[in-house]
Length: 536
Image (tube, rainbow, N blue to C red; front, side, top):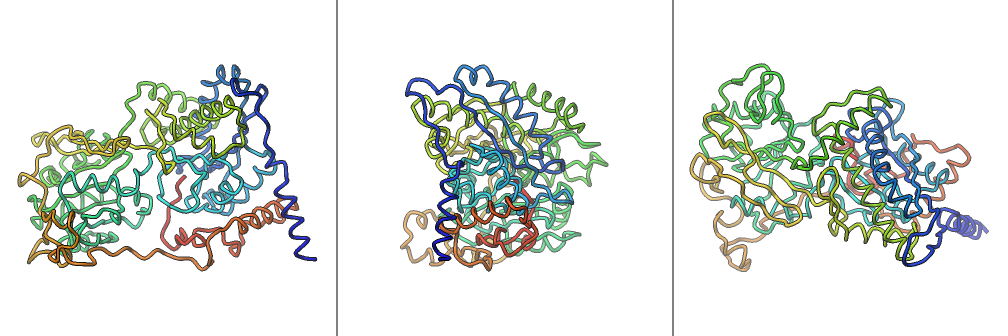
């Protein structure tokens, strides 16, 4: 009897109006009178999130206003329904996001979800997939292979897995002694899309990681003992302290190369006494302890700022509307409005794909068909060209900055990773201290303990060569939760029913940890366990 009751309940859920599919009029024109409902899940007021509603709402309004004539001609109307993912303390909360997603689903029955304002809201990702709804995201990127068949990431994303890393190392002929020094205040998972060397076959030693602690002597000793190719993730002050100590240890003579990950380019903007494109200067003093020479060994990695002249107009409109509608003051930096621009553009892409689907006789609930259209389309948005790759991620261009003018210490773009073409284009010379990138051996002593010498390309093409060694790389063990098996369709059906039932009767408790909706349930560890920072 209990089993029969469960089947009846699940049948009622699956037969609910949320799965109804309106029929298109014909194959030559979109049906008239079709309303497109966009469910938005974002932090409501906390502007520390680049994807907070006061930043994104003006961008969505601008997108719908720009498309209004085309939508009207196609017989379409669009409206948004917003729900905040913040908890009572103003922080983005994964379980709040899950409950709000359920409320949106059963109160408004959206055709598409936009936002997902927390890094660990995998329950929402799972439900979007179960409901077969496209989920449009932007913000800082997390590369996850879990449950992303209906998720489109249109922010400044990470490139295809391994493509950027392979091109970076091949272009600069770097194969070993790779390390990452990261600040405990920053979640290095946010940048794992740019620093995952597991799938790069010519990385001959396992990359090592070091959590930075002041005053920085430990980080410099770790670099001396383990690295030649150093990736640094943290504040500009942290980078300057590392370079100051490295300079004192004669580590800035060309034997090391330092890549500073500053994806939004904050270190290259003028701030206080620091001039633009001079990251070696500090806010307090343009000299910064005489670091200009040390920074000749530092390359800065940033997203490519959009070259689209329309972006400046869009940016000014977002700032004006945020002040008018929400009473908040946004700055005109790339950081302030880039994510909003990405949401603007992905909504344009989705609506264009939807219109084509409807014109061909499909429906607004043909999620897989709409996603296929989105992957096939390429549009010029306010943030530049938007195209989606096979993984439903945006093709992203990445700039490499180096000190081209040694006398003035000014940085310029010297190379660019072209995401759509998956190669690095050299734009100018790099003034290496010793005429080229550092050699791959250890700072002191003999060759690396693992793998072939740095320039032994035979090992890449002939892995059977006994001189190349075996077991060159080891993958880091994934953090696993305690929740057991992955989410199956039946599990998602049960979760969907449970959420719907409890929201309907008002008993949904976002504080329950036994629901298995946090990141640990998906085998990636919780934000608290890993010092996580929320991303959209």
